[in-house]
Image 1 (cartoon, rainbow, N blue to C red):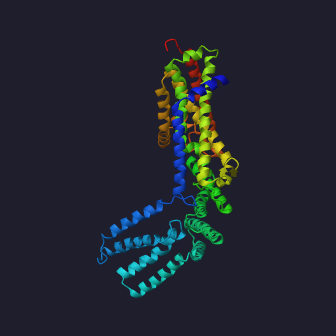
Image 2: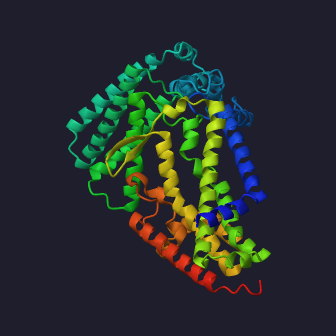
Image 3: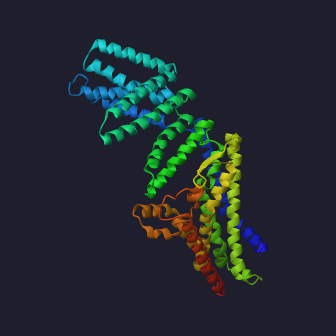
Length: 490
């Protein structure tokens, strides 16, 4: 068997197409790393999205403002509304899009600017206009001074007042329905106060920093988790799925904030390695299909199958050797891809991020679990291997039946390319019968760490049974046809 595999490997590595795919893989890996290095900031955020949108929005508002006359009584209200938005955008241009001022200038100055425009163009009240301009200047100075704690204390005071008022209303209210609503508002405001005080004590600004993003994610998803937990028994599958997603985000966000560790930063070597097979999946799929598609079909096309079958090997061994060869080439390609990423990513980003753990919430263990990037990568690759093995099996099956390289490559490729469309249609129209398709079950990554799959039709045990069923049937048919195939006229 080993000799047969070595012979098959020598044949495969003579194919120029293998090296072309590897070359493309290298080129894409290099380009991908350069783009992440160039286009993402120190917090791992995309640099240009908000700036481009800001320019477009400003231009649009300037054009819209020209359509209204501030001296026309019927148009002045719309004029000051648009002008206020434009004034805010002009102020935002003075701050970096990653700063807290950029994100909060609208919150702290919109109402003041609107009132300035109101008193200037509608009321034309000089005294009130002067007061509002003074208030505007105070707030603007605090923004320019980077005095974030001033605004935090202001928001805390405001929310404390709101909380006291809500509690007072709750005590004086007799309607049970209104009391429930007030109780919910009190809980939400308690969470807001908790977050605001945490920001104040830990100096976390509302900017593009990973700490702020984690804190915002925690606040948003915490409400969802509490909502589902208060429901008690969650019956809907979609609700269970949403609860899992929210709980995972809460736990991971809490970990980031407490440890002050940016574990989700995208522009580093660690993140690029985590999902490497999925990110470069199209290249792996092309290699799978090229190798498994030609490994048998070329034998029939060139007539070398006769020379192979006269040797003292059974047809079953020959078939298995070709299958194992395909697997080995795929594994070599994955290892080569990892090596490419380590070298290119190591040069561009450095190796320091390899020490950052990958943190996931394990629902089976009901706790956060830390993995090294290599442990996590191996787990994900292992869960993706059934998909690659099934593609090899399907391609060899078609090659044995039709003895056509085109069919054995293109048919599985088309099936793969339209797989997500098929899954979406099945989910959208509740076509449960489609759960028996192999592509519904070949991605075992959906089940990692006790997660629910996106589709309620399937579960881990069902997917394993379906995969084994397809594997046994396809290989049995492949073996029978290959064993009985007439090669005299080839």
